[in-house]
Length: 138
Image 1 (cartoon, rainbow, N blue to C red):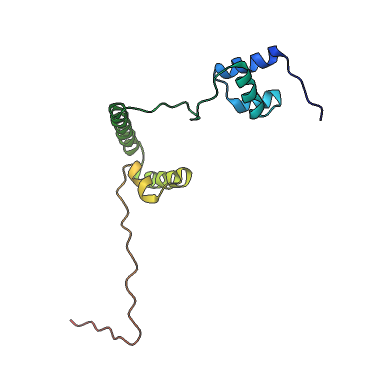
Image 2 (cartoon, rainbow, N blue to C red):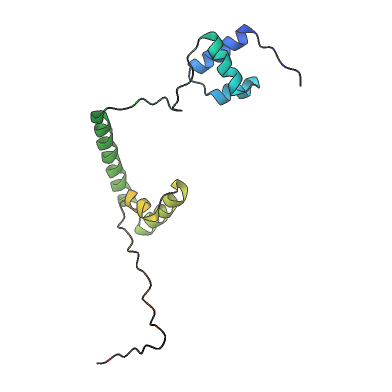
């Protein structure tokens, strides 16, 4: 396969797309180049490299984290209220199984997220050892 030479205009356009928020894999697929090539173009142009975090997240202070956590908890409580108002218990049970499967969480966690009571996991009754007699007296 013959190597394609990109013009400065094409490279600049690709870098502007990235700065505008277009994802790197989309730009690479459109141009038919690898991510390594685009990162080399960035380095040569002096453009900043993509953040280490895929979402460009910045660390939160303790206060900010607490505020966001409280807000998320309030939103989750409101969602639980709506679900319990609109859905029948059987539908909530089915929803818990869907959350478990799709989000890959335990059954207990899925039930807790939907505001359902935890299921008591009981072990099987102990088997009677061989040779032992069981007597029931009234």
